[in-house]
Image (tube, rainbow, N blue to C red; front, side, top):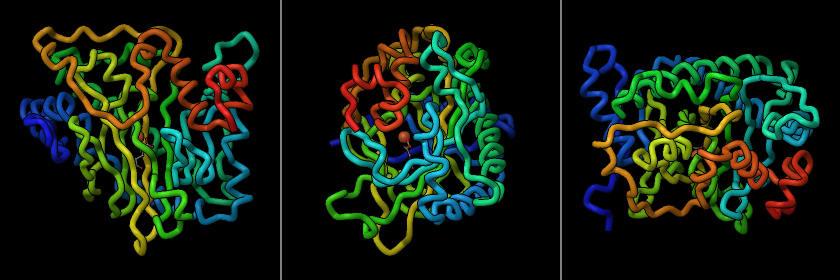
Length: 355
Ligand SMILES: O=C(O)CCC(=O)C(=O)O
Ligand SMILES: [Fe+2]
């Protein structure tokens, strides 16, 4: 049974309310979403639908290419954990995820040398599909990354206001060099899978790269589910014209649990309706210094220490404030062991990661 205050649907927030000067209405809906759900849909977000349509078309073109073309931009060619990963090469909660994906991020093109911090390896060059293979892929996805970033900063400003903090409160977490990332994912229908692989598109997890995630569900298919605080799975059905926003572990930690990061998963799409595509964006944070928690008004303290049932793996909460860069790299190594073992051998060994 769901607790009385528990959620059974995901709120829909309309950024037009801000445009109309109804900030109070928007902010109170946002408070409800971030205090009690950790997920919300946002509409009138200003990212052109045509850009998403183009990105989806390019995703279909790319994933349909022969394996050797996709392998040219495999993650294994870079220490950044950016690039292509084959189906079954990502592990969540000890099980294979049945999805194929391409991860992209701000191109910082750091040349890593011994003596530099380990996390700087995340900022090295990575491979894109060439324009000969998929014309316009890199340009389109970098444009989308910029659009997502603008929206993300706007939403973080509103989240700060919902916490009764100055609008620019989050800037301290990303003024220096940092990297925002996105990925484009293809989830094959369950009928395409080996029955022994089950129906895990991506296993139960909490996003842990930074502050918030913004997600475009590019197919009209079910699959994304959000775990409420009593442990029930709630469908996040695609709604045309909206994006899904969820809070990451970093935000949860910075607010001392006032804004909990919510567990979610994707089930493989049902047979007969084709694959599901999605394009999430992850707001990253600077990794060069420990984080200071936000100084949130005492009146919100009653929202701390919520009891939340979660099927996700351990959260790295204590590490977010103290040693987030190691937590982040460790998380990547356990998710993508081949890259981890190749570029981070010592840490991979310490973590007991096996190929
Ligand atoms: O594909 C989706 O809808 C969600 C993906 C997701 O949760 C993730 O990659 O962190
Ligand atoms: Fe996620």
